[in-house]
Length: 248
Image (cartoon, rainbow, N blue to C red):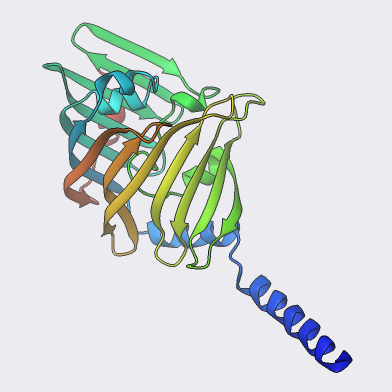
């Protein structure tokens, strides 16, 4: 009996060592992302948005209400930190440009600029566009909180700026393919703000997957809307001027 007990202990010990050896780290995921994005310079896609509940969308605050209040448009991204959305909201053309930590809103007679350095809750990032980027590790402290039996990893993104609030994101992803599966955004109070479910992935530049469908839900599980990308193109040569904050 004692010998059997020792054999069980040794088996568990070596199993723990094996699992520890196979566990992936945040740094290793970042390395894989850098490799996958190395041949990607920019992305452009047509955006179609179906909102299930306009009232619920307004509760999300800036950033998400801006996305889901558009009916259709175009998204543009240029590595490492330039993002742009152009579309129509209630018949009015609107453009949202984020260049680094600076943001410009253009709509009808509106021209508004804002510094988002210390306002991470208002910033857009590549997760909003459906894919991972190394820039996420620049703006956040990224840690792995769990790995399930299927190998899906849960990452926690805590903004490096914005004070000592509890604001953070949780992202579920496949470390083998770099596909993001789900994302939950939490307010500074610690309450969940919105949940994304990502699907219909397409590889860009051969290695980096983008989710061409993102469905958003509120804390009650009610569907807020669906963002779908069509005609996804990469490395089209987007000019820096497209993301200029001086345009009108």
